[in-house]
Image (cartoon, rainbow, N blue to C red; front, side, top):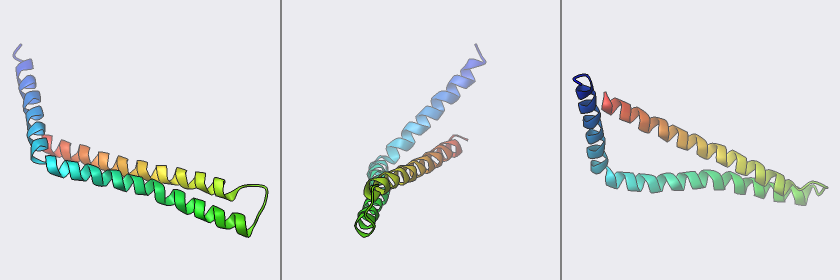
Length: 104
């Protein structure tokens, strides 16, 4: 029974510290979250629109059987999604590193 007491106390202390930290940074978190949503949105939209614009230009300049617009729109969307995934993964790593540094 004595072995679980320090572990339980440590877990409760860690959770309490995280809760206090979240309460201190609640305003920053809201604005940070909105900014991150905007960043992720634009990181998908910009390559998609650039791909579509380049595709439209190619379709007008070099008409053919394949649709460059659809092809490059899809390619831009894939690039945008990979870009967004990169940003989300990076922020996730930074949040985990901050939590680990705070817990230690």
